Length: 389
Image (cartoon, rainbow, N blue to C red; front, side, top):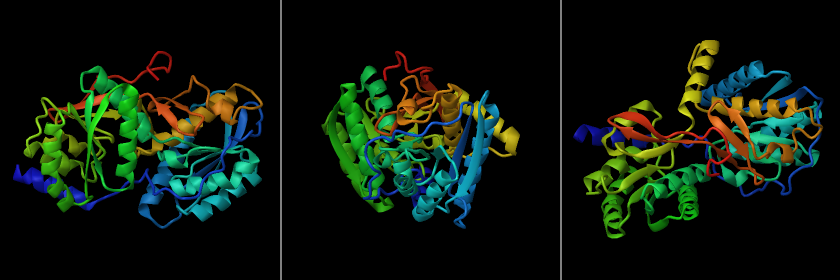
């Protein structure tokens, strides 16, 4: 037990929220663009990646995104993509300038950038041209106008898990969140998801985003869980942040997991070692269709000699959606109306579709950690028809 606590506390030394950047006060212009047409069967696409900053992480992300985009291009039938790659260095100013350059050079749609601030800047730069931006972000706050986010959003995940929880008798939910930007946004998404599913938020607890803050808050959170009659505790914590410690501390402070279900807003299986931690056993979380994800990982590894980073699939999905629309041969193939078709698209992580507000819906599976293993307990839907969306 002591060694598990030490491992959990050590993990708090690394706080990274790559796909949830701080929200800018600036806004992308409202009102979707009319959008230019493109030649039937072919399209010029600008891919904005974060390479060029000097950061090894940005280089990794950038190379994975470009590799996945090219893999998707090879899978297209009847469509030719002229991919032009632009390296932003993770800079909003550079993203703005390159988005402008890409459109001047003939791009009909922009795939990327990676960070939220970049996407906000790029979208604003080309909004007047009617060019849409499919950003590699999960930050709903920068979505809207001509910016669509490809990343799995908190709202999408919260709705999926809340619906499953309510259907399975776990309708009284205590929200436990980090006292930071991502934690606050996650709390709001959970509240919306639980309310939409017909459940009740019976309380909200939080902790300072530090080792000492978690330890100090755990006793009170556990008491709130018992006194509120919560049948589920919905946590915003991440595996590289507070999850290892907060989950274990709640159990050690008397939360009975046989009566109170732990639910996670983020992936609990990355890195894989997380599933062996005592505190997460029995917990639920949402994940992309594992069958399709595994196929993509195998194909990517065969093509490039290494496993893909989880962000790589976003670039594949973006190209797949663009290709599907261009294949239809319509003059308005890449307008907001076309992008938000209700049937959606099929990507390497399952079905997804863009919403008029710039966010997205993805067909997610519900998984549980059992005996240090991930078990799918409710499969991903294969279409949006009759899937509860």
